[in-house]
Length: 225
Image (cartoon, rainbow, N blue to C red):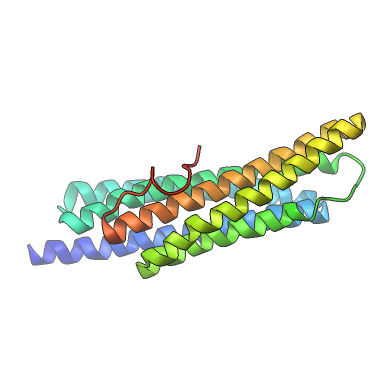
């Protein structure tokens, strides 16, 4: 039985390491998509869209590892909770990768139009939600529920920034009908970034549950859609 539990712990650590590796990749996709937007870099945007396949492969491999642990290692209560939460975290990370790839698709469409100034709060929003993802995963590694709660508070700032950007783009469309197509694409990018922030808060909520056993999904902040 002791050997079984030791093997279980090793595989859970492997699972945790895989999630951290996955989070590094999706954070690189977020920052890269913003750079592609600001620098109008089609090549980078296409590369990042292709990178989403790597995230999908990591999701499948992580899910398979979770199933193997559950089926063969007989995890005890705390181990079982960790594995169950990792399944959920993998899903949030994969969706963040999808959203970053969708941003790159919008960037390619924008780059086909004449270059214009971008609202500086849009890259700022992107940097903020990337930091939230990093903070959530750091809290996961360190078993730090307080750091995870800070991410929930940070989401309020991200939501405010999103609302300001969205409002300014809406006003731009009202004042100049020629801006409608471009502004809508930028609104879509802002929406994708805001949803990445929501997934980061989901990750933080899962960390709180992992550390404290408290389910805060419907008591603090909003859930990702």
